[in-house]
Length: 253
Image 1 (cartoon, helix red, strand yellow):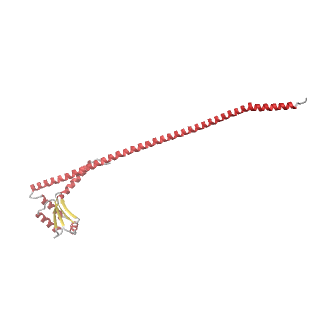
Image 2 (spheres, rainbow, N blue to C red; image 1 turned 60 degrees about the vertical axis):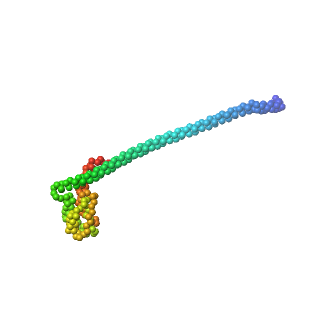
Image 3 (cartoon, one colour; image 1 turned 120 degrees about the horizontal axis):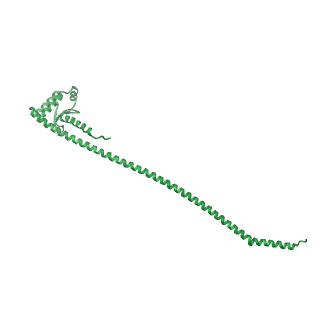
């Protein structure tokens, strides 16, 4: 069989033209459409993955924020508890200090009143004892309270031990006799005579009067003293009264 190459060539050309036309007008649009669709799907998937990633990040952000808020809440609660406890302790300390201060002031007031009472009692007792003793001496004998006090003082002067007597003799300076009452010239002479006889002959003696002695007589020289006063007995009475009052005073603990 003889091949018609012209016909074959024409058919080949027609086939190629057909393939080109198919590709140009049929396959290419389909391929392009498929590629575009595939790209759109890929874009959508990429956007979906991106949104999912963003959503995950957002969720993580909110979780971290929630954890931070919870931590801050716990810290605020703990801080509030600490501040409340500190305030409670502060108020308790203030209350204790106020109670202690009030108690201290009350005890000080009690002590002041006690001292005022003892002072008044001592003064009144001394005055009463002086009046009573004066009246008793006037009734019992022809003597005065002043004479009795001078007599007791001279007895003390005469009964000094040798060490005290020598210490007074060695003390420089003049002697001073102080009384709570006005000493008569007769009593002054007796005192002067006794001092010259038992202590220092020919020494100068200065006589003064001071109500602070509270019924008494006192010999003073530089750093040395011999005395008899009603205050000695009143001091003993005051000490006894102080002991009684202190035993009745509430504890300061």
